[in-house]
Length: 199
Image (cartoon, rainbow, N blue to C red):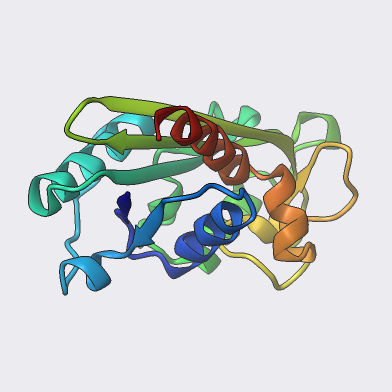
């Protein structure tokens, strides 16, 4: 079965591929928009939830490709910021995809926040769109926001997020270590279990 990944984010594509490669699932071939369609599309994320935006992307690509599609949306939810940046994580600074400015804004907003109130979580929602139905899988990673950046791996908010029971950020972990505990890793493994039952 071919599955189209509805994303132009190269970091996201690498993470998903690495996790699927280690899952020993047979008969599934992932393809990117450029590989399958010869082009990619930009889907405006206008919904107010991660589920809504994942659905928008999945349906848009399915309508074009007519093959099963997975799309995801991920948000960083910070308790002291009332769940922000949440669904606006990629554009929190006002500039879409500018990780440096997004991290800078979070750190500035939280500069006076005490240690015990820096709790946060990453949440990923995957939407699987096929001719038969629409299914959702979720992954959550609880942790905290530190007060300065550490590490150079990863992307997004990885350098300021320390998962629970760890003393280093996602950006200080290698891909294998991060994928074992990350929100996206959990969501994809939940999706893989769904695929194993479906195939």
